[in-house]
Length: 312
Image (cartoon, rainbow, N blue to C red; front, side):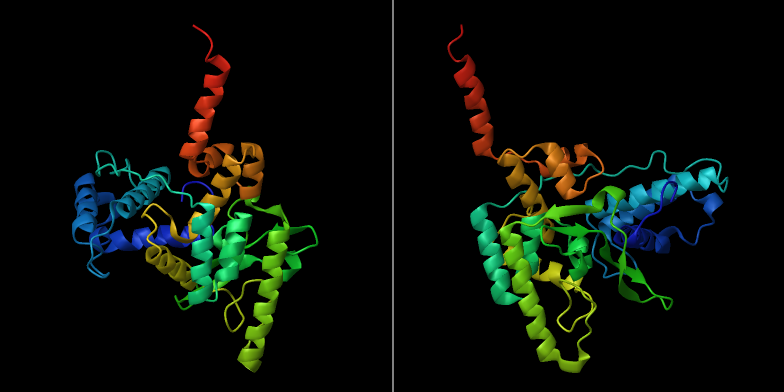
């Protein structure tokens, strides 16, 4: 890519976008690829899907992401003088109507965790996400050596990569950005979750016997090793559907969104939220995670009404 180095899951996601369009334009020499070729390919992904995939049309959001990745690649090709101009000019797609992510209420969080406790081994993992605001990859990268009396250190992530044979494997890597490396204070609720998880690990280690692989992870797989990130997300998605939550509740990521929104609605200042979430820019915190609910919106209007209601 033209700027920076993509890490872990981000690099894998970008490569996945390229893999979907390569079968459609990969046979054309780069110097001969034009806007019509790309427009045709993107339209086909929208209507027919990846020709080497499951045959289902891709979502508009996915195709828009593919277009964005391709645009960066073409821009880089211009910089390297592989092509004189980018063929992306004039390539268009419909505008997606974004549904704003929805934070859960306290009652909904309790329902969510209770169902995960009954239907999976991931109840403590979900509790930790709701109570800490960590990303899923940060949860998977947390080791017991990172847990201290007063705080936990977030300093690595668990991500998917391809091994030398082209197969996917899980590995530990750096945090998403330098700002993502941070400390999170331990509340009593978080201490209780970590104690329960330590007990769960001991029980699973005993049940697995000699095949258990202890890598020192706080949230390992059932037989040790690394946490099955995909399985965690799948179980969370099933629970969300079973509980009838709206589509704009973001699966496992709703824990991070709800964490930030609840703290924001309790009056925690954006700068503190930024440090807890590990955002490089405070604008990310404000735009993506700070959603004021109707009660707080009404209270805000009441405040000015009480202050200025007697004028005029």
